[in-house]
Amino acid sequence: MGHQTTITPRARSLSWLEKGGLRPTKQRASLAELLVGDGMDRHVTAESLFEASATSGDKVSLATVYNTLRAFCDAGLMREITVDGAKSYFDTNMSDHPHFFWEDSATLTDAPSAQLEIKSLPDAPEGSEISKVDVVIRLRRT
Image (cartoon, rainbow, N blue to C red; front, side, top):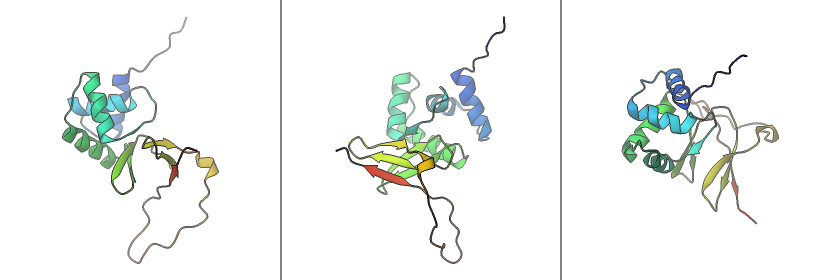
């Protein structure tokens, strides 16, 4: 009988940090496990991740959560999506894909990429290039 190797949430999160070239400090490892430990993609705010860390028993300060999310983005492990120029959501799914923003709950979810067609973009101004395009589709429940 063969046995199936299961990757533990801790091992998955340490591998994720390694992929970004980040040293696995206690706080980074703890937050990484909350973000990618189960292998599912997440959209979090700094506040929601802070609350999750408080209930997990590995309490991390809000300032550390912000700094760690910034480090994860800088390392190419997450991307930041800003809604209304104020609220930032952090996404562990690095593929190009649009998002739905649910106005009533202020949550962000993935939208189906296959249904989005962008025919052309305006030319970038002289001396600049387009680095990425964020598509956020706002939804209001009827």
